[in-house]
Amino acid sequence: MTGRSNERQRVAVVARLRPGSRERAAEIVGQGPPYELVDAGFERHSIYLSDEAVVFVFEGPGIDALIRELANDPVRSAAFGVWGPLLEGTPAIAHEEFYWAGDVSR
Image (tube, rainbow, N blue to C red):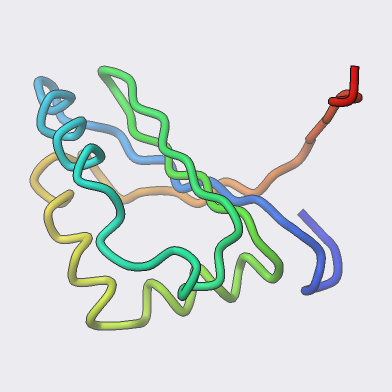
């Protein structure tokens, strides 16, 4: 997604789960984030979970820089280690290419 750094942006981190890992992934998600999302600069965060994948969606201004800061922070990024045994391969970052919002006042 292109745009100025002060515009709200969304990015997804997509990771493939090892077979049989969904239950443990749901437990981890149920514990909540391992860091304060507001302190990290995010405006919104959601997690989607299927039997085969987990998708972390982050939203906020200058999202690429926020994700980079999070990944490069040794204290906060250490909390991601719990996911290592559950994942196949390296997670991929997916940038938003399309977004639509309807009239929510109806």
